[in-house]
Length: 248
Length: 248
DNA sequence: AGTCAAAAAATTATCTATAATTTCACGCAA
DNA sequence: TTGCGTGAAATTATAGATAATTTTTTGACT
Image (cartoon, rainbow over the protein chains, first blue to last red):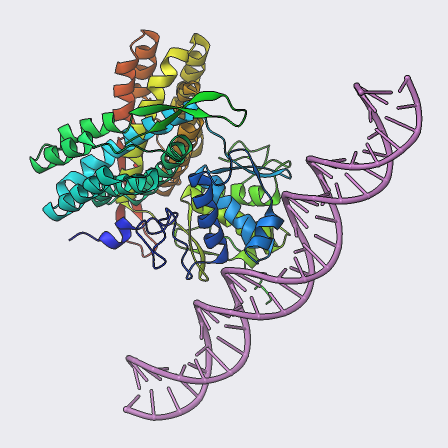
């Protein structure tokens, strides 16, 4: 086998499966990390889930107090969030949660299409039957999901499974950051309601891969991740506007 | 607790000139930035130019002493370098300059191809005659360059000019990081000698864009940035091995 | 009321000090 | 010689204190 340990783990996001706590989470805070890493993972979780509003300020002393630390590791955590595109920092004026609009949703979708297609082309020769079986399980789990969070996790698992064997760490880590952004868009639109839907694209991709046709799989994947869902949501002022998210 | 008096930089290779006078520098350090940003730009410059060897450790107290600061902003600078892929940090074990191999050169080349093609497709409708003229000037400047550094700068200017109008900030910033990596590969291979060469691809891209054929331009660009040059270089042990770099 | 400016408060950025951890050199035994 | 503890030195990580800057409040004046 190829060296999967390195490929399956993302240094910035941590392991993407369930940790000891069992809590569903995108970023796992493990005790072996430095405080700065723990804080950045927890804050990333909150930003992605929408627990912290886009545009709201992140005050270092407040965060430091909450995590019972000094502000030095908090500042380092901010730099990490900045790099992931989850926060924006203005010198001497503090850090705020990054906002996003339809333009950024489109941008992330197109970047994902370009990069995931590239990753799949390289991963295809290394894909084994057992990996594809796991990916199929992830698809089924997604189809059964009754809420967005578990659907998102299953979806992310699917993509990761079929892309990780490309063995291109820089590419995978960039894709992970884009997935974090995608998840954020998704949760912003589908925070509460989520109707079960079967993912036909995932099945088509798996089928093409099983039949030894990676180009067809890549083409479907490229279209798949550019599908942008639309949904009316209530704004703070009571009005309804359309929210957009990548659903794939 | 007392940092040794040995200089941070490899003594055999001089420090690069920084600041406003020398347009040598890849990242300009401006006085309005925070200290952390200034330090990260300067260190990025040194890493890209090869002034600091891949794999060598970056010790926070040494860097702090050199820049006459405490180590707090230095640590933040390290986080930035980490995000750019120029340094690697292991908790409690410090930060070292990222190493790279042929695999990463290929990876960066393919990511650039995928993303620059995407950017060009979106930029094409917004390209004006004057932008294309500036890009042509940059190409000429590259053709006249007698050293790698000025060639690299001209090349980067060309790519930036034709891609920037895509108006996709996240995409552009990812491409910038990839260009930094490319420059590093280039300087590692062509540190001293550099023979003048005319860039036919750049001209073909400009011509296709002027004729209103963005798809042809994108196709050429995609091939262009994946061209990997090869060159024998002397290693520290006196032997010669082949170095690889993206030349486009 | 409205607006501008100065004072006060809050916040960011940096510095100094301390704790925790790792690295390295040295001595000793197998 | 080689391998392995062991302790000193170096280094990383965090805490606490201070300086610099921004934001908010307050109050005089129109």
